[in-house]
Length: 93
Image (cartoon, rainbow, N blue to C red; front, side, top):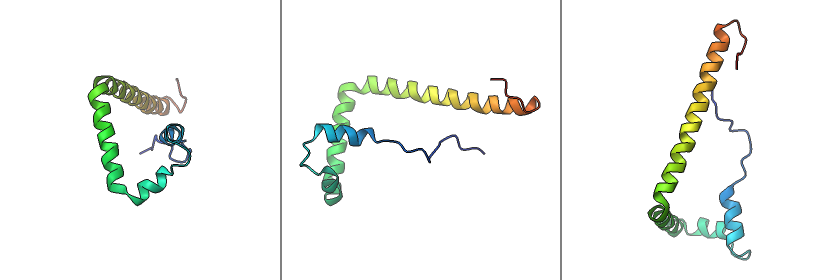
């Protein structure tokens, strides 16, 4: 079975960039998270809860739209690939 996720491609972390912009430069948040993992998880959970309470429907809608698009794209790739093999190896996309 083919793997449609390319794990070899480097993905810049949007979260890292956001935190670097929001937090002061002298605050080493990565070191704090390593030193105090449980409070860091608690703060992240609280932030997620507050974000979910205030924007839950919008986030759920965006995530479901994204997932539907990804599923559709992957199904199209699989069906297109299978159809291409059945028609003599040519891809009719």
